Structure formats: structure tokens, C-alpha cells
Length: 441
Image 1 (cartoon, one colour):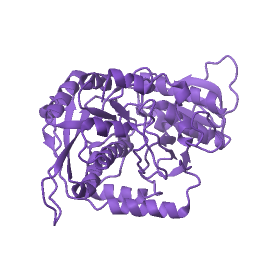
Image 2 (tube, rainbow, N blue to C red; image 1 turned 90 degrees about the vertical axis):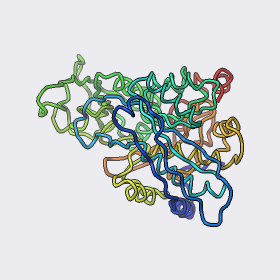
Image 3 (cartoon, rainbow, N blue to C red; image 1 turned 120 degrees about the vertical axis):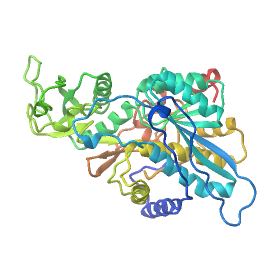
Image 4 (cartoon, helix red, strand yellow; image 1 turned 180 degrees about the vertical axis):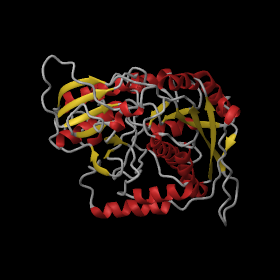
């Protein structure tokens, strides 16, 4: 039975919080992170130190090796240094999940470890994946672009490798380019735009001014927002393109360009920004060029998997544990890597002593149930490998709501509210079972 995030009984919240607190009793694990030329070459020898067996336990533990493969790409400097990712972004989240896996895994005879490898190009990333696989890593957390992820999937075809996408939000990866050996923890842009749109419409903020950058990612998010507006009853009153002034004075960044429409734009309730690299969005609307309105999209009020201010459903304990262990706050990429690691741990635990294909089949099935601090149990969609999950609607400091919002029905699985976010099964161009025959694993 699928419950709504809006009607779960209070005692269930307490139960989830207690479960999360119990899971925070970690077995000590270590992690080596490569840097410099070794990491750039895709060296895969970084390995978490084995956890010490618990008192009273005997016998050898079966190793479960998880890889973290990160594509080292250069990104433009954001408008604020606060938006720059720390060096261990994502890896710290995987390490957190590894601790929880080992806390219970040793009772099941499993010992989890984490191997970390980097690649500065798609080719280097594939070479790093090969080394990870040859050293016994079957479950790979992929922190990479869509192009690289597809090349990793091509290498993994026919091998005992399952990839967990924690970075790429490209819709095509869940549609025409879907692969059965790639599971998507990070939501795609359609899911994120739908989650935000539902909230804005629910608040009766239906008239939107869209301001977008010129980068391909910005245009992809813009398309997702326009699609969401049409789906949920919002009205786009004007679309304006922000012209990049790289090298210009910092004081000029963020001024909203004037309308190019021949008719005067109607009034708007919200300025929705499409600026995934955070180059100009954080300055809006403070540099002028538009009316003072709520700002949402990729800045201001955002749809996200995680918030540093999230406190419900055991999230306070999760944030506290992460901050204690890593001396910084948890980011969405950390949360996504954490969920990937826990999904692996849950599947292996539920299929003790089973082979890889049995575990992989379980991950694809509705038998996998996770409750990572969002109030409901979650699993992967069978038709495209996307992780079903509620999406936080949050300011920089606190969540203000959780989507899906009530009142947006859909036909395929009416009892599963989260399927109102993103592409539902009847719309999907991906048929995972068909793809699986061509690309097992």
C-alpha cells in the first residue's frame, strides 16, 4: 500500500526517526580519496579500510565492493563561492551510507568497502570503470555527465555491473537513452520542474516570468519549466534570455534583460530562473530589470532532493551525523550518493548469498523499499529506472513544502502520488524490460 507524504500518522514519523537514529550507530570505516595525476588517470585503488568484526562474531565476511566514479569536469565559477562544491562532494555521502551498510551488514556476513576513481574525460572514466570492475567492484555510483554515463553503460553491457546515476538530470537518460544497467537516484529535470510547478500553482502563483541563460543545461531546464507550466495550469507571461557578460564588472551581473516581446508583458507573480551553473541567478531580482517578485527555479525557491534545513522524518539526525563526521553540511549530491549506497546495502541484505543478477533484479523490482528521510517508502520505477521520491521545495535555509502536492491526479498509478512528477509510464519512451534484453544487468 502506498501512503501519501501528507497523511502519514504522527507515530509513523516517530518510528522513522527512531529507525534513522538506530541506523546512525556506525562501524568505523576509512576512505582514501585520490588527488592529482593519479585521480585524473582514473586510478581505482582507493579503498575504504575494512571495518573490524563485531565482538562475538566469527567466520569470514563476504566483501561487497562499491565504486564511486567521478568525472572531473571544469565548471564555470558560480556567482557566489558558497555554491562551489567541496572536494569530497558526493563521496562523503557514499561514505555515510557505507557506515550504515556495515553497521547491519556484519550481522548478515557482509563487509562493504568503497573504491574511488576519477576520470578527466569519458575515455578516462571508462578506463577507471574497467579497473574498478577488475578489482571486484560490481556496484558503481556514477557522478558523471550524460555523455559519459552512456559510455560507462556501454562498457558495462553484458557484465556484472550496475551503475547508479547521482549527477545527470538529463531527461533523455530516462527516455530514448534509458539503459537497464543504469539506475537513476537524482531526479531528472522534468521531475524537479513538476515539483516546483505544483507548489507554485498550489500557492496560486500562476503567472510566471521566465529568465534563462544560454548554456545547454539552462535551455533544457527552461523547456522543463515550460512543460510543467502547461501540465499544471500556470501561465508564462514572458521569456527573457540573460546575456552572459563573462569578464564584465561583477556589479553588472544579474540585471534582468528587458522584454523583447512586441506587447507589454502582463503582470507576473514569480520570476522563474533557469541558471543551473548559478552564474547570474543568485543576483535576481536585486540588480533590477523586473518587478520585485518571488524568485524560484534554480535559485531562490528550489526543488531539491535535500536541504540542510530539513528536519522531518529523521532528517535532523541524518544532518547531525553527516556534519559531525564530515565537518560540513550535507548537499544534495551527498544525499543522492547516500541513497545509492543504501539501496545497494538493502538489496544485498535482502538477498544474502545471492549472485549479482539476483541482486540486480531485486533492485529493479518493487520489493526494494527505502525510507531515506522523506516520509514514505521509495523504490525505482520499473519502466525507466528512476528513483521514485518526494521532492523538497526549499529556500536557501529551510524547506517550505514537499511535492507532490495534492490535487494533481494521474491515470497510470493513482495510488502512487510521486508519479505525478516527471514522465509517467504511459508517456514513457523507455521500456526497461525491452532494454534489459539488449543490455543485461
